[in-house]
Length: 206
Image (spheres, rainbow, N blue to C red):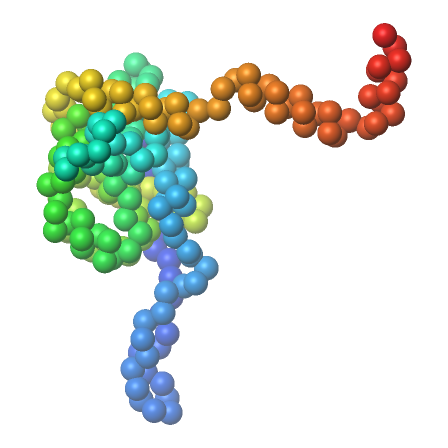
């Protein structure tokens, strides 16, 4: 089953000034300061939890070799009703970053071969129309969300290998806070917020 279905921003100075007639450089709207982390945070709008899990920075193996590759976001569709599959998202935040990627698009094969869908995500205007490879989909992010502007075609993924599986498990471990630690932090915070006199009264009741 396809991922759920999912704007352009920025302004430019006038091309010339009235006094000198000189051309002014294009200026990007400073309010939109994008980073990979910020783009990643918007993926939840097209891959919403709990139906989807999106892990950041997943490698195709646990070691470091010349063939090691990292994907910015690995998507897991975990509801049988939506279809069970893995997908991947490459994040690009500048046009120069995109041009570098497209010159060596084959490097994505190291992880794409295990995925049913492959996307590139970027702020609007970073990727020129028509440059996305045929096997990729495209996601555009904005301040208030994200939209799939081009559906990724369904691929025929290879069976996932043990090195890739272990790499995913390691990333899950790195991104997970043990439940016992969460409970401990909650109790500590409650104790900090609880008025001192209530703490004293509670101790005297015993």
